[in-house]
Image (tube, rainbow, N blue to C red):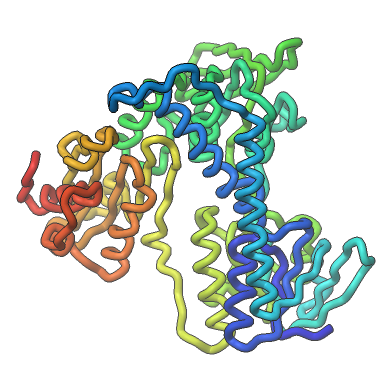
Length: 463
């Protein structure tokens, strides 16, 4: 079979690329080894974790916060099996949506493992045997997989990956989480809300290290209030299986830290899926981390072979993969298209959420910028107080002379939604005064970002 484009991998990057290619008139095939489309994000990552976060946040609020609203909620309990059934239903619904889009756009779906057999050929091995697809272009969108520790092999029962932690049958008594980034904090929060004693062990001196200090310290205090415990600046060195779970030994400076837990979640990052792909054999160059090297149009060192998403350098985020997918395919079609890597938002979906885009305050200073920083606490925001979501703050970092917004960070309920305004502002090259003078509905949480902009231009209103 001959195609204009064969996409290997059907995660957010892969299926978005296939859809856009078909819209632009390319005959397109998509190859996916899994039985369902959507990749890690839809099946075991972004979507199921958000379903569990939503369910457990409701349960936690009912336990801890309903009473202040005058709502009596005695005798609450959580049916974990039913929660998981709902989560699985959400995943199935979204997967059916991707299937529909493949059919709607006339995309040939191939189930099996895709391997590059040459610069214009993909071999697919599946239940139906082996098939060879001829392609004018090949797009690699194989994503990433969980990274582990050499002394802690995943078993799905006691030593868990994030894939395992979204599918537990019941809340364990205790859980040690190795890694204080987005995955560790989110899944640690899920199980802590259901009564699990969660301890986070982080090698760096603070959690969520890609955000600014003041933001991460505030988040840590809020998570501690919710029951999570933290050991920072602690590197896990060894593990021993015990009758009741695992005993971890970590180094904290000159001291040794010993922790025992029923379950251990290893959340130390992810690594690109390039093994068995045939890319290196085809002449595709990889970097020292195993990521595929690409040029300006996401083309690899082999003409006609492209790569996007987690398998190339940059943040491993679904929305980054989607935007690269659109841009790469449009460039294939001769259309002008690009990705602004400077304003890709990042989010940690704890409660409250933490979201950021652009430069942190530390990065802006390191770049030599003379900056103006404005912050605003949500305790002074009417909608936040009225809704019982007054924890957190909004922060705007701007160039002091030009006023151009360089970055923004938000710690609040719905921060994942609120950050979009800052992303749009920076995409258009806007400044802090533009944001401060933009009328926001009152009362709304979005006013918090506007107030931070007022503070950045030296005109604070409500603080």
